[in-house]
Amino acid sequence: MTASTRPAIAPATYRIDPARSTIRFACKGMFGLATVRGTFTVRHGTIVVAGDVTQSTVTATVNAGSVESGSKRRDADLRSKRFLDTDRHPEITFTSREVTDNTVTGTLTAHGVSQPVTLTVTPEAGGRFVATTRIDRYAFGVTSSKGMVAQYVDLTLEIAAHPL
Image (cartoon, rainbow, N blue to C red):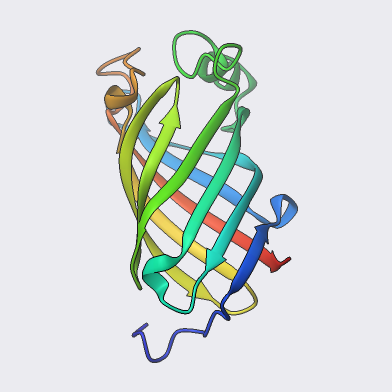
């Protein structure tokens, strides 16, 4: 989709709709033989679309304990101290620092560690956005099960937002 064929997103402040938004993850597991997929729920967030896109901002908070992968045992492990340690770090947050037509760069804080992340963003009709990125879980201090679980995690954010 080129910039000229993308849906126009009107300048405004938008509230992320948690009921219609999700974050999907995928990473290799079982020594690279299988792909583990799952989701997180968005707790809340705000997208400010400015007339000058470079002045736009994004903030979002994710419920770390909402992780679901289709296996109750694995989900409990992901919430444990071995991985996300959701008792100590119940939220994952993102705050933008630079926005362009196609990307949002900012700070992702997970597991008590903050790292820069760049999201590739595609606006869709009806106040929807799809963003993708790859993160290095080791950079966030999530190093358990090296070899068994891949170092990199692919994220796809499917976000619906409504004007305030």
